[in-house]
Image 1 (cartoon, rainbow, N blue to C red):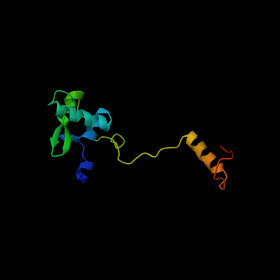
Image 2 (image 1 turned 180 degrees about the vertical axis):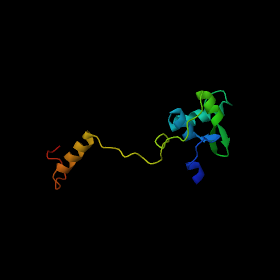
Image 3 (image 1 turned 60 degrees about the vertical axis):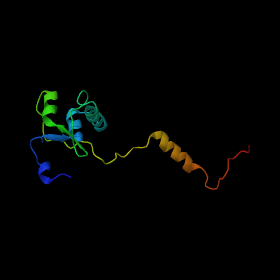
Image 4 (image 1 turned 180 degrees about the horizontal axis):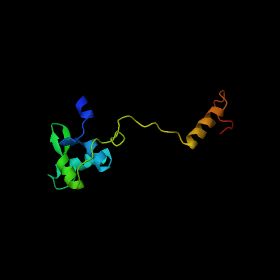
Length: 116
């Protein structure tokens, strides 16, 4: 749960969420979590530097800036952080054709028009 002050923050926090770090690195959320877990599993030998606070994973801003070689631009745009809402899928033309064929069949037809 975030507070209202975080929404108007002009400088990056000392610890970023994995989603925020993924947006900065321009990688996917799942890849960022995999890299963070690999870091913890290998005692820092591989992966994305991460610290565990209870059940939460956080990425230290200093490490991320060091790895990037520049300060992080903040705030991260809302389109860069993935949302939890699913994206509506557009049915393909093949799906639409299949639906049309189903609708065009007579409703009283229970069996195939030929015998086996």
